[in-house]
Length: 235
Picture 1 (cartoon, rainbow, N blue to C red):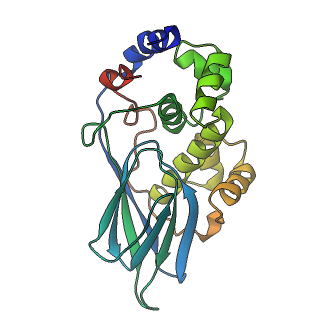
Picture 2: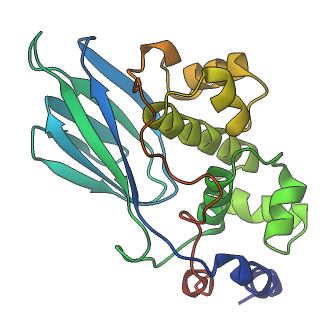
Picture 3: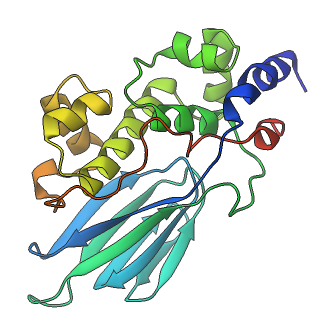
């Protein structure tokens, strides 16, 4: 164990001693023939259950197609594409996405990349940069960026992706305005958020079928997505 790992463990553990729960949300297609979302990546393992219609998931090492009552679990940090298709003009295609907490799954082999993703996802409204992120782990910017580089990651890409993922969940679970959601999730304005969605997910925000009334979303200030101390000790 190197010195930077010891510093990381010591400084980060106190902020992780909070209760954790799972969170779930739905993605539905009622009017369009289907919906394609490219490059989804959650900072936790995710279980996707097909409620109706069909869903196709393409990840790095697999391609899966599920019908009603089928489900699949993807690893933490795995990037995948999601395609939803209605079976006919009168049907609805719907999937339930559940982020699994570390009480539900094996939490071995957590990486610094995972920790950074959880931070950016949990608090997307923060003005994240290498200095601020490294301070969360008791490191300086260079060691943080160097370790992420060895893991095949870059802090700027992690922040950008997780802000979009957080915004996607908020869009699908609330009826808040786009401007409000953009502010909540760290974007300068809704125009920037729309541009990021197009670049990362290859979707137009306006094509998402959102709830007309606010659903129960995950608490913005909670520690639902932070890691418990016993996981950090594995770094």
